[in-house]
Amino acid sequence: MNLPSVSIIITTKNEEKNIKNCLQSIKSQSYPQEKIEIIVVDNNSTDNTVELAKKFTNKILNKGPERSAQRNFGVERSSGKYILYLDTDMVLSEKVIEECVNKCLPRRKPTCPVASASAGWYGEAFLRGENEGCVALYIPERIVGNSFWVRVRDFERGFYNATVIDCVRFVRRDEFLKIDGFDESLTGPEDWDFDRRIKKIGKVDIIDGSLYHNEEEFNLKRYLKKKGYYSRSFTKYIKKWGKDDIIIRKQLGFWYRYLGVFLEKGKWKKLLRQPLLALGLYSLRFLVGIQYLIEGRRR
Image (cartoon, rainbow, N blue to C red; front, side):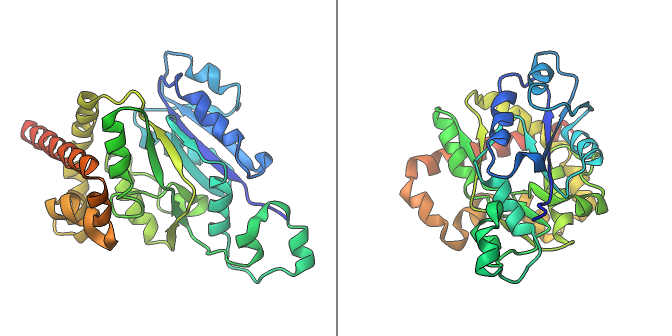
């Protein structure tokens, strides 16, 4: 069977502490390695990021100034049928690529028992003909680390999977190029913008497997500063889609960001089961909101 190839685009800048774990998780995927292309797009690192990456791939590029440009640059020079883009502090669980390809392959008739026995990698979903023909997929994200605030971040992130606060990570390359990839004029909401445009192309869904985002060195002050920096593109993002747009109102409005996304579809039960984390979650959201207001006044 002719399996489709997958290009993994990893954006880096001074990530010597994380790059090895990220690349090792790719090398440990259940999907055939000969069908995986690893492209590292560095942004003028001054540490050992590039040297460490060379141990895993010879496809190392250099591009800046922001991750949107890095991702687009990597995709343009990729050859896979599918694209998976990662940050360097992310690690994949073993079957992420396998599951993503299964969901994206076109629907097909179930194979006969003889064919099933020789199918090898394809997995049970493929053998049953349950592929869904998705153009893009969400991958559930877990935040890992030992501090209280990391536990809060992980708790919060679980509410966002496959909502308008999330963004797809696995995409058909032809569809990525059709919509011109990420908007390089945005830094922060470029993920939301891309997610909205890819949904207009075709079906999106979410897989069961997870990726793990390492925030072991989480620093609250640095986190809030980063959120403030990202908010500088909000005005441009709002102008692009319109201030009365229903998705904009969810992503940036009070009611959905502080209530709706945490209450919908029975998720409110999670808040009751973890009151301490729920208190931390709302404390963090409050601080982020204050940071947005400060940045807004500066502009």
